[in-house]
Image (cartoon, rainbow, N blue to C red):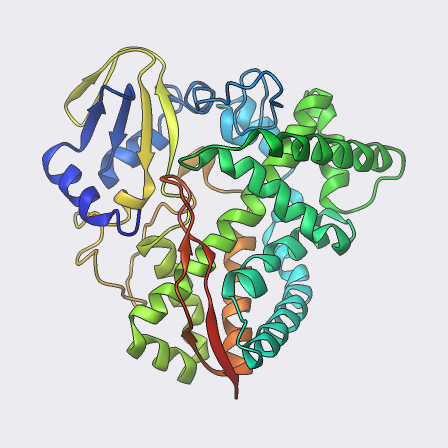
Length: 388
């Protein structure tokens, strides 16, 4: 959990397509093999793979989970259906739309950094709680066109969903939060159907025209919470952890804030927040010279592919000047993350805001890691910081 990368290296060298019989799961660890899987949806299906994610046994559970059987969301569909759904929600994530949102992101980041500094004076600053966690929540609220007063609810709902990807799974008492989330989005979607605007929820409300059922529209809203909040928040905590472990890089970054974009890009490769996702074989197949049965469930490990020396010379070194940098942090091909541009913009702006306002930042206690093999990041990251 703390450092999976030596284990990934061992797998790439000795068993790059490795079967774990006790889980009936195949691990795919080499960059070339991961790209082959992601490039071949007709052979390696997202619909079959994500639909096989283990479910809670509780009969009271709600199918708000990623890739729930019979519920189509972007992450759990294949072309051409995936392409149609993606086109239906593409506009709010375009380069021009993200550029238009950038000043608001900067305003949000500056306010959160000010709060972080205020807490640092009291000795209670936490990078995840004060900055990394709330930033994507507030940005998503802006994008969806909803009140920022739902910030706490958004974070709780995202946590309920991602708990299914943690080692211990979600607790039964959290299932009611899933109902709360559905009630909220149902109300907002109904309002947008009657009074559409230019916000993302209005775009999502119109996806029934693309063939989504009312349940699937709500599931798409739930998916947006995970894709828009947890992944970005976790990545920012990973970035700060990297800076703590590379003090010379941190010092240079505070002296050269324009380096922020390159640092974000290399962080995406070096310690990405989504370590892997599932696919499944459509028929009997072969990958990396290893025969695979039909219906084989694959965990495609982006985190391992991003440390493959065959694709990234000196892969275990953090190098902001690395070029080219064909990392797979946002996936590849048809399933490349829709919000990649928005996520990178948020991360760069937040990092530059932190540099602008502070003279430095240091760890101030023991951080807590997320308990997941799929999502990688911190849920607590106590720090101290001081103003410039």
